[in-house]
Amino acid sequence: MREALLFGSDPELFITRPDGRVVAAHSVGIPYLDKSPEVVGGRYFRDGWALELNPHPSENPSELYKNIRNILNNVRMILPKGHGFSSVPCTYIDLSLLNDAPDDVKEFGCNPAYDAYKMQVTKPDVDAKTYPLRSLSGHLHFSGLPHLDNTDNYPDIIKFLDLYVGLPLSIIFSRKQQYERRNFYGKAGEFRPQRYSSGTRGLEYRTPDAQVLNHPQIFLFALHASEWVLRHFPILKWDKSVEADLQEAINKGDEKLQWKLLKEVSGICTERMLRSIKKRDTRFILSI
Image 1 (cartoon, rainbow, N blue to C red):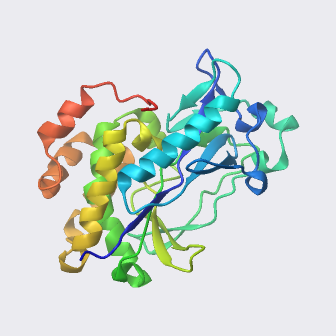
Image 2 (tube, rainbow, N blue to C red; image 1 turned 135 degrees about the vertical axis):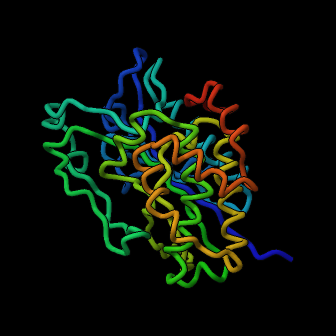
């Protein structure tokens, strides 16, 4: 019998007006964390300018996606007519709109994270009141396997996740906003150890952005590829020689390096598969 692996996520999305422009989540009634409503699938609240989802975790990736979808359906019902969602990795805001915003919207609330390559704490050194860029995340959470109880394993696990998940997602979503976001946030190797409410230790992979939600099959690919890494981790051997190229491929979008490194993960996805996906419309959809 296989050991249980629990999947979680805390993705963010921007809310858009009928003309497609991004609006602040608080301006359409999205509450702060301390008043987040419990709905079918989990909870939702605002995180700065964005809507954050807190779906119930699941051992089944499809069930996790269903929880995300159900939360979004609940949010959609309270939005003004014609408003929707956007997963664009980052957008610029009019800082003057902060004047009348709640205090929590005027701050970047992220706790420090860690860099698996440099083995040091990382936190964007920017002021939300003067820096107009706002970013979205598509963080993935994992717990339940014995080697996830040992935080010493986390840096190498994250490097493998970069190779098998972060790299393919960077290839699929080769948009400039993805790399603009990574100037400060969600770089290759970014992770955070977690202690969940159950008391279980777990790992948060922070490199993916919100585009991982753009299609259910892309989201499920990311989780199943992650599962392969996590279940095979005890027998995997990390190759340090790829680290510099991998970080460049994910953080800067160097296409030559991306396709070169993809050969390292040919058992999970192929160049033909990713080129086929890239030809399709990979903008955000809410699959019912």
